[in-house]
Length: 318
Image (cartoon, rainbow, N blue to C red):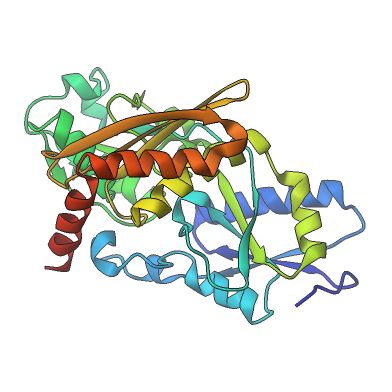
């Protein structure tokens, strides 16, 4: 379905505060480039927003935060949707494509601490400290490096999680640095966690704009927001995840760097308890980003990643 450019362009978004901040940023950027156009935001709740009393990994992974937005596009109710790219599955519904990847904010994980631990870092928090995270990826890596901590699931939007931390339910929580900074809460980033300790999620820190494949006018509009270095890094990461057939809720972490025309991808797969851990590195031309991701996935499969992922699948199903 091709959009009629005589009418407003309709942008799909989740209703969460962070999602709306990100979507309104996209709206404002497009409005600057296309002053004669009108862009409207249409917000909706997704399955992942509605189910808050269950761990993410147990809900299911396919389109947890995206399915309702995708139906909106396929039904012609919206023209494109803005996602945190880390939430967007690597296999999209027929008729939809990843039309644009925006410039990435810092993709690192961040430690946020209770007031009583302001003088502590991750490595100096006392034994038995209660660390909150809803991510199996973060959980597995932190268990691997800091088995003396106690880990507890935490759900809800960013403000809800911070309130739970500040009320004393947790000694510290792990959040994406990008989300905190986009919400003007960068001062809550107590420590940026190095990739040696916690490789970040695929696509973390970048926005992915999804649209209909057969909508050339919309695709042309979106391309003004494309940031090629970020896109190359994220295409490598997404190819790595897709080749492993892993989802957003699986302990798979990455880190990508660009050096001129060269792209280096580091990736890991871990068991949930952090005991089984495989990690590797692949380097190649940035223009061959997806091939780099596929090669690294194959490398880790040869090191035992397949068996780890099969065990995780069985564990989550219990």
